[in-house]
Amino acid sequence: MNNLYSGRWKEEMSTAENRSARTFKVSNFKLLESGVIDVFTEETEKAYMKKRPGTQGKIEEQVNKQETVDNLRKQSILAGREDGSVNTIVNDIVVHLDETLLGKILRVPRDGTMCVVGKTCSVEFVTQCSKQPTTKCAGLFKKGMKSEYQLAVEFVNKTLLPQTEKRTSTTSVDLYVMELLCKFEPLNLPGIMVEHMYKTVIERKGILVGTVKQAFSETTLVECECIEWKGNSKSKMSQLIKDQDQLKHEVEELTMKLSGKDAEIAILKAELLTAQT
Image 1 (tube, rainbow, N blue to C red):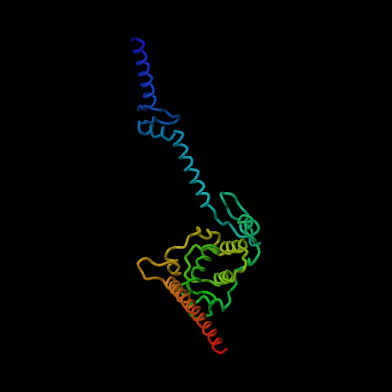
Image 2 (image 1 turned 90 degrees about the vertical axis):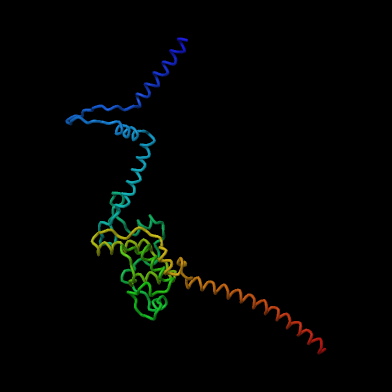
């Protein structure tokens, strides 16, 4: 009986000690060259929670992610060089970025057109992409272009030649690059990118170039008649596709009827030859 009582007493004592170890009492701590700091139970428990391995690991992971994001946001163009290359900072490291290095990073070929600044497209291409007859090779409004070419403008301004501001009209360079894309001409992507960065650095005196790559907005896709607008009637593109399917069906029916008529004609010819003999 005494042994049983002694065992329970030891168990209760160990439980009390563990509870005491987990309990934070109000106490005073003195720091060097400092006054007295009162540490309250809630504040100490919060500190204890932060020191736990699992919580600390999550906090460190979040901090590391935030540092990575901050470093990526620090990417900026420093200055242009006489050879057409640029100096930039990536993750606090100064990088001399030229066509060769950028080509290795992107792993793309460097064959094709590499200089587009100051170039203009042909008059035939302007006539082809514009809704109204015109010969302007610059300043063509995006809404004045056919739907498929409006989407090409978005691609050029957001991917190949990114701009910090929204464009409502095209430049001569935009139209020139669009014409090359429509003709499936090879482009030296690293050369075009470095040239665009260098030009922007010189003109804007080293401020940030371009924006984060964006997806096409729903409004843009509706304007380009790629999708239907909710609540409105069908777009011209979808209506044309529907009409095309209907015409295909009618052509198939006419083809079948024509095949039947050809068979009847063949039978009549055979009967005519038999009657003549």
